[in-house]
Image (cartoon, rainbow, N blue to C red; front, side):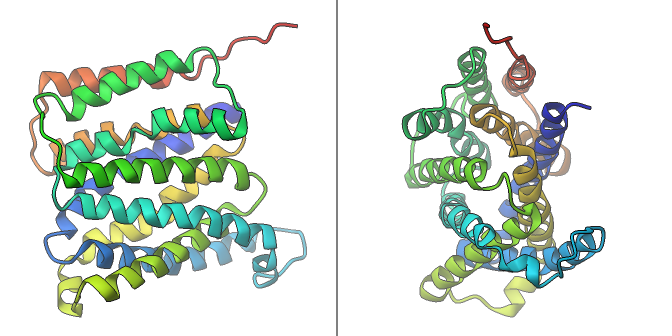
Length: 297
């Protein structure tokens, strides 16, 4: 199995987990505020990752201890740098979901497929491969068919989620820049901790959560924490190692497809012909993104 193919598989698994997280996040918002949801899910992610990291350390033969591996300055630099835009993105998305529907939120969030190549070219001078502009066009049309056909109004929530897409774009670029040579699980634990701290500060100043309300949405929090923030973001970091930024953002945008599919399965939402067309276009875009052209000698 080639590294490119295995990286694609890891990232598609990541998007599947994120897709179902839209269902969990929507349900969780029936009981607690957005900052509380993010704070609790991120602390759960950190708690869940620590034993996993400890177990994985037992298979390493480099002579380092569990504690000593946390003393890597590059690891903390990567986790903190990626955690700041991630915390902004997660909270903007969660607050935006209060006043916009999940489908449109998924479309606007995944606009990072357009933003990432632009930022990557402007700041890192990384020019995307020949097929990527076609793939991005197909993906944008597909995402529009999935989430926005028949939707004509724009509200405050939509603007917040566009800000979320920009913050996610920065996080994707930083993961590609700093995540290549550090422990993926430890890096994710650190960025989740940063997100938990930022969200807790917002929670203290803007919300009054209760343990009873938190307990009423334990399963959405558990899924969004352990699976979405915990496992999925680790898969993103692993999958992005050595992958072109524009390809990575394109594959990650498939979370919208899985969000619609899981919404149909678990929330009994009916998929329209436009949504089926959107899924098809997204699938074609991801397949085409895997085509590699031989460089001229």
